[in-house]
View 1: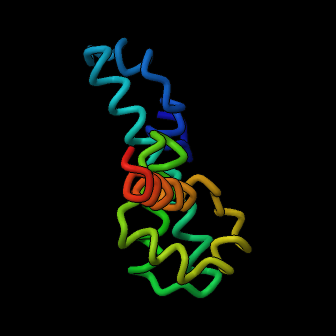
View 2: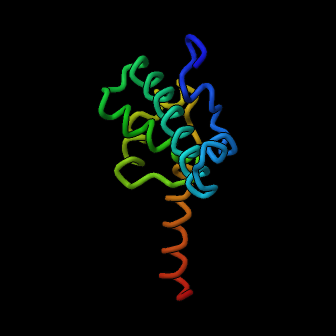
Amino acid sequence: MDAGRTAVDLLQFDPGKLIALGVSPIEADSMAQILVAKHTMLRYWHKLTKAGVPKDNARRIARAIAKYDVSQTLPTLHQRKLICQYCPIVCRCGLWRSGLLLTQVDELTEKRSSFCYGV
């Protein structure tokens, strides 16, 4: 391995390199996505803690946003509440994603319309 470079740097999150090492294509894609999500989460966590979010809450928020960015996975209700609670800091860190919370509004609208209109 090159001096100063990690395995993640050398792989550059390329599933093809994992396949060349003997990993199945499905597992390679999954592993590459996990590596990207973990790397992204660590960067986001660092930004949030540096901006003053307590470490545990920063970890939860960073995980939710990283999963959303990497695999379009929506945050849990608890994660959404934390994102709302720390909204100004999340925005200052450049981590705000409108889709993170708009889905909650869409779900409420859908429930209201089905309740009100019998849809």
